[in-house]
Image (tube, rainbow, N blue to C red; front, side):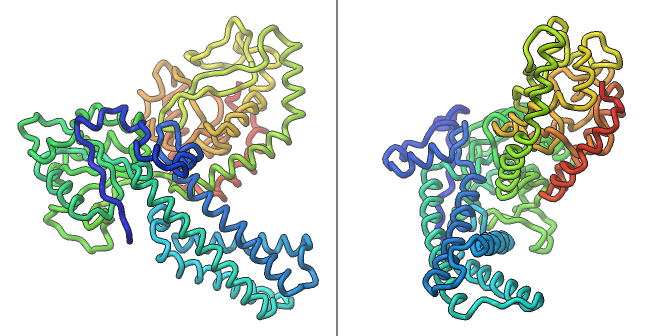
Length: 509
């Protein structure tokens, strides 16, 4: 496998803002400049889900075109028909699914084109045998051998070329420092020194070490570790990870320092990062299957991000497609609601409110206005209660039926919310007299995914007023369950049950 060297940032070359800078070597490549514009996020890092979705999209198009070309070359009677196109699309979906099962849609897999060719052939053959068996069981005529051979050759050639191109692009972006895992070493001393030295010896891990977080004084930090940027103490860790979109935390505190290790991990569980504890110097040696390896360095996996790169691509696709369809479906309801609000009281139809979103960042959430303009509470510092005088007559109805939330479909289309996820809370939302984050330990862990228009907690009865500690505690527990058990099917289940959950107006004022 061809791998780029591990990037290590020095104190001089790695001020915090440097993470956002575009690497200079992209300036020399017109191709990379176009890729940067297409695939980077606002922190100038390449979006892995976008890369994987693009590869999967070209795979699907290639398989459909190969099926149609095979039918045309063999002068099949239904070549070019709608039924033939539907069959080709089904084959494409099944092939992409088979490739996903074979771990073909990950950045590490795409780095090596040669390693992918065998997986492509096995996936195509598996789909062919599956469909042939299904046709036989259903009493349908199986594809002719000539068609199968031509389709296999064309599909294999197209998918192989896609992987050669993808490997070249991934390699170029990696060498430009834009497709590496931004990594932080947590803890200094000899343990950190040994891990960094081991990673240097094996450049297989595509890492960019940003620096070290350690509470200990400089004189207790080893000479090698001191060469890296000292980014702060453990108190600074959470904000840095959020601001700089850190991908990986390697904890080098020895496991025998149990209290210190627990102190660190309690701060990290709320972050959207992969967390690993170095087992390089561990006295207890476990079965090799118990470890994750970064290069040749054994790591104990403490926590993975709730959604892999491929899962994020699927969820983004789900949000855009279903979000657009639902927006089209509810447009008449939204038009009637807008007219009723306009006739009911003076002021704007829409209400925008700052709420916590993904990675604990503030987003602007759209709602229909349900309060009198001069009594609106932008920070939600006071909970809405039954017969609240701030709420308009129309506002009471649209809040009880959740029609006021429908404009959040615009947030879904814009990409800062999902259809399903933990509900976004306002910045000053309280349970009783206490802020949510002061009531629930690890509250911010619910922000490891995008907030949703509806959610697992909502369809299970935890909707509306949260005036007690127990209510917000239960809601967060359901949110965390959803994050840990996410799947497309779970999202579809929540969406399907949401209209029924609205039939109960309990706690919705």
